[in-house]
Amino acid sequence: MSSQTAEAAGREGVRLTHPSPEDGPHMWRLAGETGMDINSPYAYTLWCRDFAATSVVARDTDGRVAAYVTGYVRPDSPDTYFLWQVAVDSAYRGQRLARRMLDFIGDTFAEQGLQYLEATVTPDNEASRALFASFARSRGTEAVWSPLFGEEHFPKAGEEPHEPEDLVRIGPFGPQPETDD
Image 1 (tube, one colour):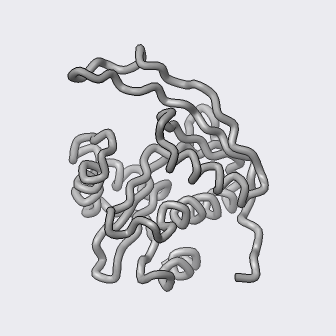
Image 2: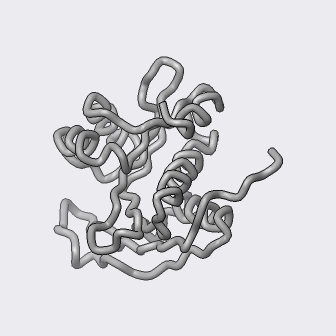
Image 3: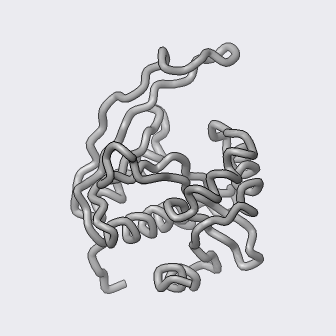
């Protein structure tokens, strides 16, 4: 267990660690339960094999996946981590779990020399926008927003088109400053 995993283990009975392929089905279930864009069960399992080092799961005291973040280092921008999905089980909301996972990722990648975190967010997702703004402030840097994908970039599925996705770019950043908590 890494020192960062050990540090995260004691708070609120939830332990942060990297996923394994066995977590894929649980992440798929959680994506569906939280109303996210759902990928195939195979995609989540493969993600947990090929991108485990750039993703994190939060396990409760029974070892159940309570939340996850998936992401990767962008091949064309090796100083940038792209966060793909954040999902938190409804039973664990309000405990700052999404923020703890973001801090875990930010600390991990700052130690490896990455300077930026990117993600896409729909215009009406106020919770994610607040999460990324808070993360940027805590790192002493900015969250810069710009349009990335419009409705025309997505196939029409059903009556409603996919909402546009705005890019947030946070950085440059380093480790989170120490506090006297």
